[in-house]
Length: 384
Ligand SMILES: NC(=O)c1ccc[n+]([C@@H]2O[C@H](COP(=O)([O-])OP(=O)(O)OC[C@H]3O[C@@H](n4cnc5c(N)ncnc54)[C@H](O)[C@@H]3O)[C@@H](O)[C@H]2O)c1
Image (cartoon, rainbow, N blue to C red; front, side, top):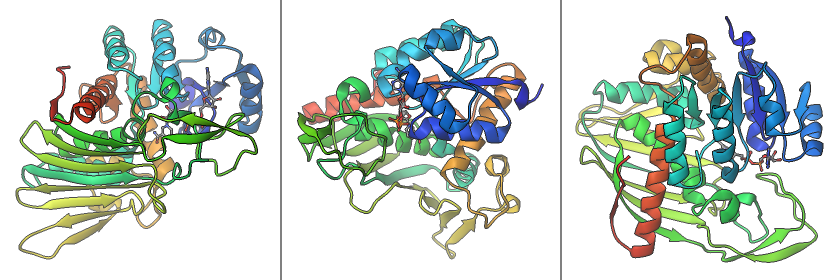
């Protein structure tokens, strides 16, 4: 059996659904069809992307026996009911982050996933930049000593103006947390994966600088810069920015700022991990360079190259060094990992991709962030 023998369907055909479809095709997976928010939008997406089928409903999609795997790329509030239905129909699932909008929902999905032999993954794709995989293997093997400080940021500017609009702004579709839920969880997932350390406590400060925004009358694509002619003012309670202090299981400490209102920062994720002997840092806008910090000798810049990386880094790479791998390539590398597990008949013991348990862990951090911000104190994570 090869990737071409596996049938996939994708729910959602917006910004990221399209990236899923393109990278499934690149892998050689047979993309059977797409499900949109309604039959008309689904048909338009199938036509635009060149897919044979636009399903009329999730039931119709799940009745298609040629579909083995379903990718969920709909808005956040739909992940839980859709994933539940997909698992009940015995299919493998790749769910976009966040796994759900509450930790009760994500806990239930973890239990449902544990009761099947299906592959269940959360799409934390940033782990799959080859140098992030390399850093994971390098730190696991002791290259920086014991991780002590885990710091950085994830800043964007696409919600800077009060006329910028997206479903993520509204709690009923995006969840209670916005900047943290949307991009902060990417940073936490990534740095936990690389450092091998789980967050145990948080101290959070959340800010909503734009408490009223202008909602366009009609739908808006994610990252769209178009201004609608007709808008209505809407009260916003989700945060534009989150500042977090973090404590980790091994005693390490962390600090991260997360913002969707930082002018000029299009998609800037940076991390630095300072260990007891050495350090490492990385910037998503120059993803083919990993910086290695030393005390008693000159620092190093590792430019991605198969012969220079460890096994985990090399496994995630596709192109020769100097041919920069970017955002889309991480989906290809992640899907290759997930579909290898599907071909093998089930999940490996310790997957490199994020599992539902990892997705649930992010939701528990979100709960602690909310309590901490409301009560102005350190909050320990609930036990998983
Ligand atoms: N991993 C990443 O880097 C990344 C990046 C962007 C978005 N995401 C996640 O992907 C999801 C989608 O985000 P987006 O930016 O693509 O949003 P988007 O608004 O661009 O697309 C959402 C899509 O879902 C469809 N949809 C809405 N209701 C539906 C329904 N009932 N059934 C089927 N489809 C429905 C819409 O028609 C649209 O095609 C979110 O959960 C987001 O957090 C992840």
